[in-house]
Each structure stands twice: as C-alpha cells, then as structure tokens.
Length: 244
Image (cartoon, rainbow, N blue to C red; front, side, top):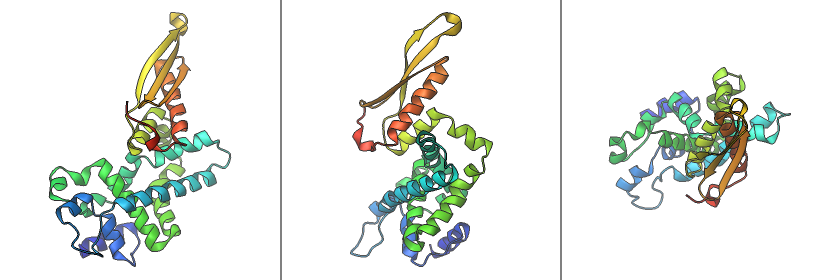
C-alpha cells in the first residue's frame, strides 16, 4: 500500500504529512465490512471524508466562479456549479488521476467492477479533496480543484460550454448527486397552429418539486423547465424531496 501511495502522491503533486488521511480517503466501506475495526484508532472508511469533501468542493467552486464571472447572475453561476460538481465531472477527474487503481475495496465490490464505477470514483475524489484540505489546508485543496476540475472549464473549452448549457444533462447529474429521483418530463400542453406551435413541458422530481416552461419546440421547452428546476435545487437539501 505504501508504494501505491507514493505513486498517487506523485500524480497529485502533493505529499501528505499524515498518510492515514490519504489511506482513509481510498478505503471504501465494503473493505471495512469485510475487515471490521478491531479497536480504537483503526482506520475508518471514506464516507465521512466524502461528506466533508462535498462541502469543500462546493465552496471552492462557488468562490472561483464568483471571481471568474463577477457580472453573472445567480442562475448562471448555479448552472455552472451544477456541472462542475456533478458526478460525471468528478468521475472524469478521478479517471484522470487513475484513482480507481488505488482504492481499497471489499472482495464483492472488487468482483463487481468497483474500480470503474462512476459513483464510487466520484465519492472517492470528494474524500480525497477532504483529505487534502485536512492535511494541507484550504489552499492545497483549492489548487487541486483548480488543476483537476476547473482549469479546462475556465479556459472556455467548447466541450465545457456545450455541456454546461445542456440543462437536462446538468439536472440529471445534480439529482444523481443529491440522491433524488430521476427527473421525469411530460408535455402538458400544445397550443397554436401547426406551423408555430408552442409546447409546455413539465419536469417532475419526486412528489414535491416540479417546474414548467414553454418553448417553440419540445426540446427547448424541456431545457427551460430543467433550468428552472436546477435553480430550485440550488437552494434545497435533497432530504426535502421524496420519491414519487
């Protein structure tokens, strides 16, 4: 394990003072289930670090977006943040680090392809961000997030711009991240003559959140409805919504 940590630290470009933080960030709960703690001081899994890393990531991404886009309204900032902290984006960053090869998994998780599972990789990356924050401070975590998550986006790559303007994909990623029901879309109204119809599309997430929008096509109406839902989610906690 020590040699593996040396390799990962080289990829990250940071050497931990407390190696146990890095080791814990790489330890999935399945490993703990198969090797239960024998007493106090035994290394835990990465779930608490994941919890902290989610908050550190959200804060530092928000901070950088405000600095980079000082005139942008809240809705635009929320849209970009949702893209940058999405499970898809975090998984890409984790794959760039080859994080999967360093994880400590239980046998069952190993056999089911855990090293390449999106959710598991995204969670491990959040745990790693927390470990960096705890070991080296906010500046170390900030530099890591800038290099591994933000720089390409802030450079204005076409791919980043296309994806961030896809509100339906951003909403899908956000609901997955918040462990909410999958968004469901339906056309609730069509009006006007055939050559210039106006469509009203509703998106519903669980029982309690829905939004509607109009557009000259089903696609544009769905995108607008997803955008409204994203703006609502930016101020909600996932536990406030129930499955439907």
